[in-house]
Image 1 (tube, rainbow over the protein chains, first blue to last red):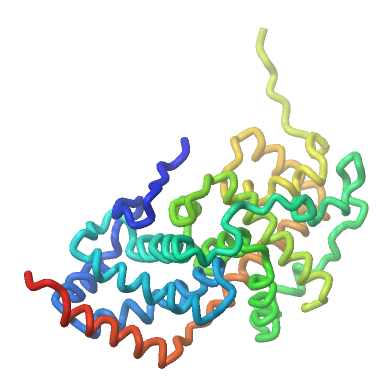
Image 2 (tube, one colour):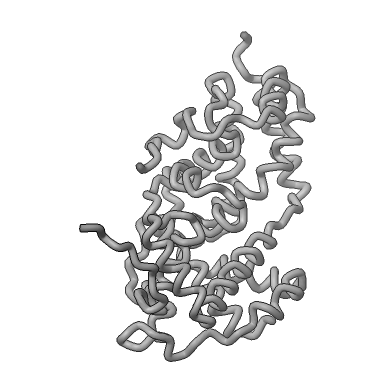
Length: 213
Length: 92
């Protein structure tokens, strides 16, 4: 069964229950506690800007979208019932703002055929490997922490088509569950997985080709 | 007549199909039959197993790219925004 997807990003319903600690922060926020706001900003702002970058090219505009979303949170604070996690709620506002401001460059899903099969040329017509993967997984585990690798992957994510970038940012960078990502982006589970699959395949292929390892 | 359920054979799906199903597999989105097919294939096909390991590593590495640093100026802007909201919000 598919999860219910709310169509209004500022709709205050959601799936996950509120983190008790966040509930406390929100209570303090309502009373005007500056520290509570600073704490939430430190926790979520960078991720909100990253998400906005999935829609806009300019870092400054992404920053504005995220700022605008914080204002949306404050204005909607009294209506927030905590039925979705605060992060999911904030992310939905970010997406809505990015889109409604007309800032998105390409909201629709990519249909470019060249993206469909990043790996397709590597199989025979029968479906077996022609060019099997170079085996590097075992050696790579130790090198995952190398700073150069993270820097390169950050660039690779930035270069992805927008829809892939949005999904991989939420799923693999922020670590959000599939249902939350679908709710935030307003896409189906199936679409989400297609986009995620393409994004991961592309990053994997670049890592291999560029011998980052 | 009883229907005998045969164990899936590694060749029931091709490498291309196994690779195409990998994200669904990792997400636990496959039905039990498809899952068994993928697992039987992975158990026998070292190349597809390697591909899966590489995807797992790709996911792990992508999870490490979060920049935690918040630009101090941006943080200060946000604090101003909060103070303004506090001042201007309707009295309750």
